[in-house]
Length: 326
Image (cartoon, rainbow, N blue to C red):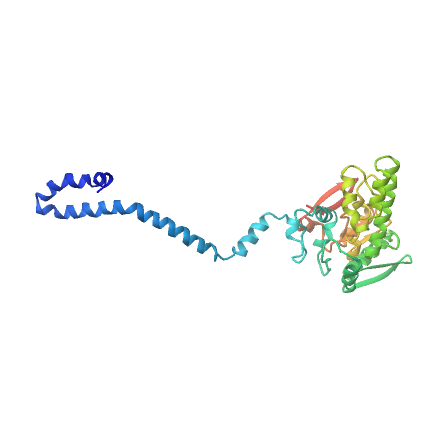
């Protein structure tokens, strides 16, 4: 027997004489041996338990079911804004790295919480003209002539506009469209408007020495959809592409495929500077939702007091009220 073993058993040998002197103490001897054996076996048992636990945990890890979707949804909702919670469930939200789509949703996304029987676009931005045209063809619309200009909108939006127009006429006021692009626009229409802003802006900033001829040409040669990121990056440096070069291009003609006019829920009017006209339009569900786009109105199909509950915040600028995503 090794020295270690003798040391471990030493207490037993010391007690043996005393235990053997009395037969009545044999139960105590047995108890002592039981506990002593347990102490000796405990390290080995613990080692075996740890190994078996590791093996079992590996096998369990392979079959652990997916997390409860209800819990995940609740956790996800905690991170969403009120506006995001009111968005259509089928609308794909931009990823964390897609800052262009995030910006477009922030600036132009109010229409996605429009109420009533309107139909929301299936995406923040249409990828091409074909997708846009196919979607528009499925929507119920109504066309009316205003001062000889044909305007097409989703049926509910048009009916609300006609009611607002009648109320305005009763008060000796007018609501007239701002040109042939005032209502419905196609994907190609949004490309044309975008190109005008971009080409004009590139020439403007090149003349002022803010852009080299080479850089301006490079951007100009890109397809309109491919220019969006480039232009927004230039605007982040203070080179704006609106009509007067004082604000973002998104406030006067948004990215191709992302215009609210594509949804046929937007209208540009000539009388936007009249507070009484803006008040009438608001009573019929039409609001300004793009800050600094002065003639632009969006049909949201609800009353003003309900807009905050949809995640829209009120911004007052130059005595105009705008409702934008929070």
